[in-house]
Length: 112
Image (tube, rainbow, N blue to C red; front, side, top):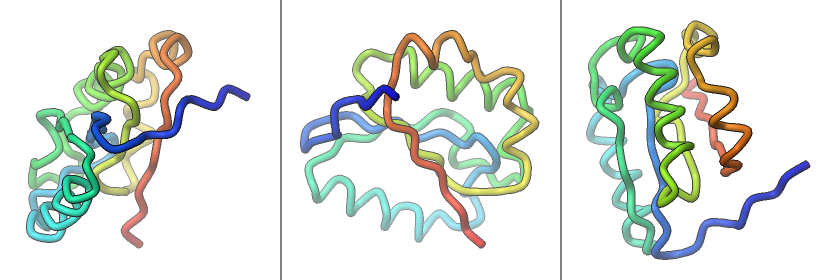
């Protein structure tokens, strides 16, 4: 198993919406970002994160956005903005070769 370096203050955390956007709960999402920023982390969001859509956009876009964060050498860790039932739809587009070549921590989310 590959263990990437643990994120530390000053590192960039990439946030994507592999299942759904957070447009329906922006206040709590922004509070979560505030906590990360207060602890010294920087954040980078993909375009689908703030969508008010149960699917956070189409599957290919969601997969491409996840892969883009893994290919970004400045991103230390990737977080899912929200959980949901549609993650499996984007898996064919996740860019598994990119993920394998650029190991990073990946944190999922469940809002159940």
